[in-house]
Each structure stands twice: as C-alpha cells, then as structure tokens.
Image (cartoon, rainbow, N blue to C red; front, side, top):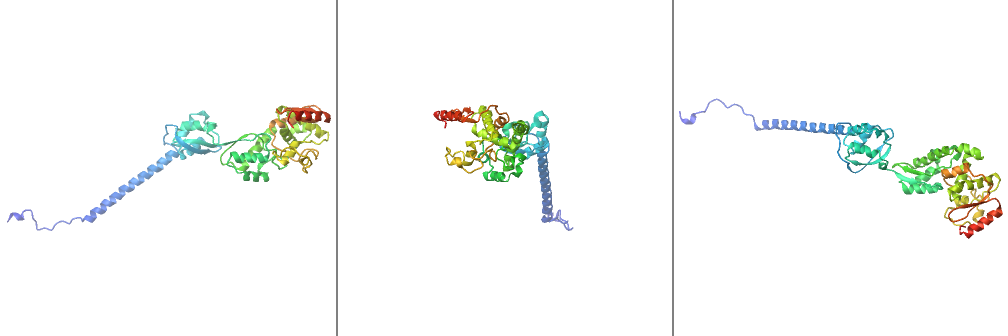
Length: 366
C-alpha cells in the first residue's frame, strides 16, 4: 500500500470531552477555592476582632495620637475597662490592658468618669493616663460664698453645657434634690458654695444635687444641729442668719461679731435692720437704698418686719455658718463698715452708732 495509509485505522475514533464540559469543572474549582478564601478571611476577621476585645491581639508601642474620649463606669473591672479601650481603638487588645493593670498596683485607683486619651496607645501608657486626674474631662465650676440660687444658675449655665432653663425647672420643683427637712422644700441657701467638677452628660438635677450633698456634709462638719440648739435657733434659722452675715460682712474675721449683733437684736426683740435682706429683693445692682425702698412691703424687709426673713438670702460658706454657731460674746447691737478696706466697727448704743456712721461717711464708705 502507499505511504499515505501508514498509521491510519478503520476503527472509529474514541469519544472526546467537549469543550463545555472542561470549562464547567474549572469554574466549580475556582468557586470552591474562592469560598475557602472568603471563609478563611472571615474567620481571620472574627478571630482578629475577638483578639482585640478579649485577648491575644498584642499591644501598641507608643504614646498614640489624636484624641479619644472614653467613659469608665463605677465598678468597672480591669477586663471591662480593657474592652472599652480596645473598642475605642485606644489599646490594641483588652488582654494588653489587663496585663498592664496586673503589673501596676495603682490600677485599682482608676476613678469613674470621662477620660481624654489617644488612639493606638501602649496599654501601660493608657493606664498611666487613666491614673492622672488631668485626663478626666470635666467642667470646673466655682460657686463663691454668697451666691444666690439665681447666681448659681447663671454660673452653671455659663461654665457647663447645662441649660439655665433646665436648672430653673429643678429649682421650681426641687423634690429630687433631697433637701434636708429643715430646708422646707426651698433650695435657696442649701446649695453649698465650693468648686465642683461637672462631668459631661451631667443633668441639671445631678449638678444641683451635688451642691445639696456638699451642704449636708458641711452641716455635719460644723455640727449644725447641736450648735443650733446651743444658740437657741433652728437649723433653718442658723442658715438664714449665716446668709445675712455672709452678705453683710466684708472680712471673715468680722463674721463672729456681726453674727453676735444680729443674735443680740433677735433676743432683745429688735428688728434686724439689715440692708442685705432688702437687696435680696431689689437686686444687687439696685444702687443706694431710698426712703421708698425702706418702706417696701416684703417679708424680706427687716427694717419693717421683726425677726429673720422667710428663707436664706444666699448660700453661706462654712465660715459664716461657724460664725453664727460660735459667735462673739459682747453686748453690741450695731455695726458699721468703717473704711474701704472693709473693717467693721461696733456700737452698743444708738448715739455710738450714729458717730460711727458719720466717721464711715467721712471715709467715703457710705
């Protein structure tokens, strides 16, 4: 036969796999690989998140950067704090923080509050910041002695995000303040003057309640109940008289003698004749009192009405409270501010008082 027939066969060719069959298997294999990869990545993500919040995620190495505020609640454990910090991105993992806390005996001293920290901090450095009072985010509010409730509202509204309207609403319905029973449900005089740290998110009720709590502490410190019995007044009357002393006195050293003058007048049945109680009604910027002012029909006009006014006229400080409870022991019935430095002179008779008034005017005081 010819060479053309070499290698040829009369048997039929074996069946061949079509091209679509081969592509289908390749795609299935690719999908399978992709699923495995996705599941692997998902598992890694879950594991990484778990590591971050619970443990095994390692630690950052530096001071971090930026600003992150975190809230630590009263009673939070080191593990809870670690989870809070990790969730906020402050530390890399909760376990890093708990390890740092275990190594630092002061970690138990972390106080509740809002803290200003950084992102990406080494856990031990984050703990150091939590232990620094300067890291606490708070509004510092100073309430001076002699502030009225209206003054306190204005100061809080100016120095914190708390609105004046919400503060006034609490003062109008003060049941939540838990005032002492002798306050008769009226907050004036029972919001203690001091410096307060107001945390972000503090409500009007909480802020004013802090001042009531502080007053109650001061009342215990000065032994108000026992002292009131000793001077023959109620606790309410002691606070009211202390508020008048606070307003009338210029120098703390004069407070006990001024308190004595008012106590002597009360015990002798004399009117107090205090300008301070009139200014409580007229306002501190009213200007010099006129003859018409002295005839004002008000229970706070102690030039017309005997005894004490119905409420304190401001928030007295501890020195004024103590001045009433530990007043001087003389027989003075009058006092006058005698010079521009604020010194006070005292008199037992009306003629002595008039002479002091003339001297005060010569000195340009009144």
